Amino acid sequence: MGNTLSCCVSPGTSPTLSGRSGLRGQELRHQERTDAYRVEAELREAESSPGTNLQHISDREAPEDMNFESNPSDHARASTIFLSKSQPDVREKRKSNHINHVSPGQLSKKYSSCSTIFIDDSTVSQPNLKSTIKCVTLAIYYHTKNRDSDRSIDIFDEKMHPLTKEEVPVDYYKRDPEHKHIYRFIRTLFSAAQLTAECAIVTLVYLERLLTYAEIDICPSNWKRIVLGAILLASKVWDDQAVWNVDYCQILKDMTVEDMNEMERQFLELLQFNINVPASVYAKYYFDLRSLADDNNMNFPLEPLSKERAQKLEAISRLCEDKYKDMGKAVIRRTLSADNLIGMNRSNAILS
Image 1 (cartoon, helix red, strand yellow):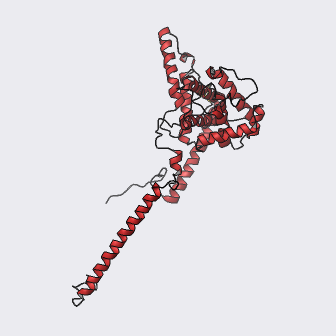
Image 2: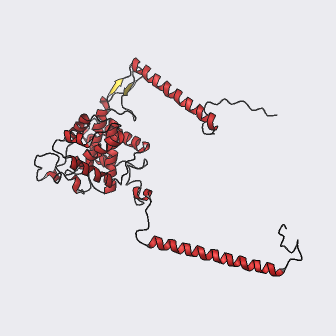
Image 3: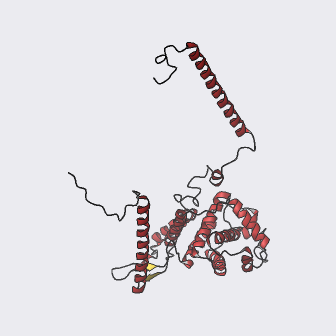
């Protein structure tokens, strides 16, 4: 109705003008469709030509063929590899204990009562160092014992890149390391470099990520160098004051800095430079390590809750509670979001 060229408003409008406008509109629409077809053809040609299709970084770090089951170090919903590899031995132990009527050792475990509360000093934010290292070494032990094959890479082969000047035995690739040997190797590195228990958990995350990304196995010929590379990377990512490669050469005196640098470089490339460890993944590995300890009767040290420690825990709890209350009030004052309505005073509605 508001068009000045409409016959309803301007009966004297020239029909020739309307016809020319219609032809002009058709030509414009035809030109637009032609341009769209040309742009689409150019895009298809660019995608098909080699070297011009740039892959997105998310596609490089998380390939589509990696599902949750094969990539536990990136996704919290996937089960850890070491826990699944330990289950055959755990079931065999339980079966043997049941047949031979042997107590699984749970009777020696301390339980809380009404008068005494037993707690350990290991939490997800501050794990016990000694117990965590034992659990991590046990996880690596099950990796080597129940491996599927002996896939490896030259940079991790101890025969090609020895850690010491001692001659490597001829049958070195057939000797599976015992749990105590793995523990002694890792404990020495952590003691000399003064690393934390959190670093041990991140080491295990990087180790399983390497196995998944590079499609290799931990075997007698490469377990030391793989563990060393994971510890080297985890200490630099996790600790604020990282240990330099030359410092590790002081611990492993027969190893050169050039070899250490090359191993670190290839380790990062095999990880596709994905060194991110989400909090959910870290927590999953911590609790799975505790489950592994329970399955193998490696209980964390328990001590009775004393009055002084109870008061300390109560004080820490009050500080955290006050902190979260203040954070909630600040969010409510700033945004008045419906997600943070805790602590708000509500008045009764009056219906008239």
